[in-house]
Amino acid sequence: MPIHYSLDVPRGGSGGVGDLGALPSLIAALPDHAIVRLDAQGRVNGWGTAADSLFGWNAEEILGHDVERLFAPGTAAALIAHFAPGGGRKRETADDQCRHKSGASFRAITSLTSIAGAGAGGAVEGFWLVVRDVTEERASASSIEASAILLNSILETVPDAMIVIDDHGVIQSFSATAEKLFGYDEAEVLGHNVSMLMTTPDRDAHDRYLSRYLDTGERRIIGKARRVIGLRKDGTTFAHELAIGEARGRGRRVFTGFIRDLTQRETAAAQLAELQSELLHISRVTAMGTMASTLAHELNQPVTAVANYVETSLALLQAGAPGSDAIVQEALAEAAAEAHRAGKIVRRLRDFVARGELDKTVEALADIVDDACALGMVGAATPSIEIERAIDPTTGPVLVDRVQIQQVLINLMRNAVEAIPGEHGGIIRVTARPQGDFAQVTVTDSGAGLAPGILATMFGAFASTKRDGMGLGLSICRTIIEAHGGRIWAESRPVGTAFHFTVPRAGRETRDD
Ligand code: ADP
Image (cartoon, rainbow, N blue to C red):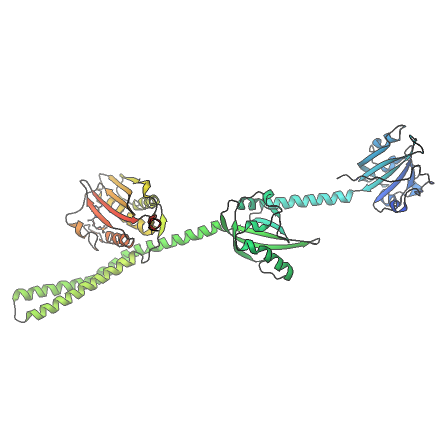
């Protein structure tokens, strides 16, 4: 903003050479202002105290000399125009290049005011020239500007969001990352209380936290990072880590908040945890192979015992020997006990493979089917198997343990692949449709069809028609589906087989409410 000097001076001041008596002494001695009086031709005829240090001349040296000496070459031309007869009576302040006695130039704000002679329309008798050095002022202004540019470049690039508030919690600056994170432009938040970016209870308590700190100096959060919830412009919230720093200077105190979005980190952690639980499950399934051979050994004993008891009983009954009844009864009781023991061993394996507790979430059936199809086909030896998916969109989401239902689908897909003869290729169709409160999923294959007699036993343990089959897949599927409150069954088709299962639809709870 230009500074205007308006000097209220008596008309026709005419002291002696170097005498500024006409000027109030207070003004003549102004430390930062050189006051110079000129005659009508522009020669110095008065010299204020501050002019000495500003220009390097003293009164003796400069008095009587042309004002041009005080300006950088060429700069005085505009001034000199005033000295011509009829020249301007008053010159507004100007930003000029002045000259020191040493020849060095400096920037100054100058003001020239004419001294009119007595009487209306009196001739110009001389001028007052007021000069103020602004070199340092300019330098500090440009260093402030440079700091502001530096600060802005930091605010633009700092990867964490940065918010500066004053000691009343009013936002002073808002970095580019903060704009992205919170969805506000800087202009929308500047001058507002920072609590607008918080959720309750912090929102209500922030001013209290701040004044408590200002009153007591007790640092509760300054210098520490903590997890807080931020509120975006659109009303959504997100978790972030907040670290607060404090800066003081020139009687001002500001607080700087560095904010790191934790959403990605927390999502990644959740995904990792999920992956780990899946891996755990898969590793259990893999371990099943190892366990099966141990179990085969364990089962061998009770099963052989049952066979022995039954054969002995049969032999005794056939021989019809007296008193054999009691022995037969005892043998059959033992056979039953051994059969129960075998049953327990099988249950143990089933519980081991199908995780005990269900972790039910609302899931899109199509997603589960997609994943299972991809996994189920991994390593399929048959090259030309086509997969068809048809999920009726009215089925809606389901409430299931995703990993376990995937496991069921994978088992059904693998069986379907194995039922399709290697050389011909075929088709596997996965469909889903609503069935009351349940979604019914069907896996149909164009394979060889069910082996005679297997339909009745296939969902039990160890029912297999395959040379190296364990006969556990469908039994595990049944455990999982029944744990979900659903049902699983098979159906022979003119070509191939269809397996159906049901799982609860997610809307069921809502409808029950
Ligand atoms: P495994 O596959 O180890 O034999 P499962 O419990 O998965 O054990 O299957 C039991 C039996 O059910 C199989 O051996 C097979 O006879 C029959 N089965 C399962 N799925 C199909 C299918 N898609 N087509 C024909 N038979 C099947």
